[in-house]
Image (cartoon, rainbow, N blue to C red; front, top):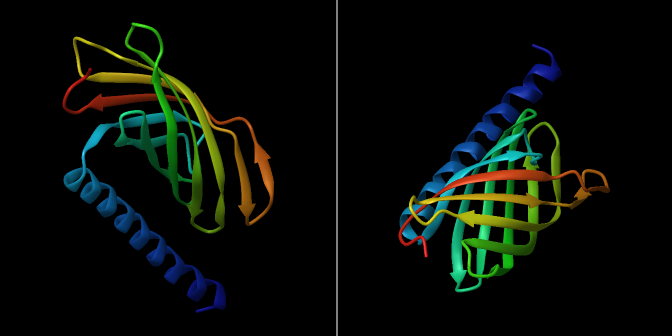
Length: 163
């Protein structure tokens, strides 16, 4: 057995443990808090192009927008505080803006800050929300890098009232 084999086996085991812990935390948070929406996000993410997407209320006009994505040899986690979440006119449109952190845990470790601005439509007849957003980011750890290509489409199930 060479050094490379010994080094990669524990890393994969640790990564899988972290993925399972992240999923358990998300499931626990959904169970014990008031998760408003749960679905998927398609677009540029910390890891891959598809993520589990969740919204957690922090007040009437703010919320936490969290994603867990898998790909690129690891798991990516984005946690964004949308400090602005406001209706747009009398329709079912809402716009939002926020900032937060992201990380990628895998063969490489990345950590940075991320912004978000988007538009969401909540259907009145069915409990579904569709959203389009843009997420520029600044990677700080493993390398310093700015990216502005983080566009995404969110499709989420709305729990409780759709008002």
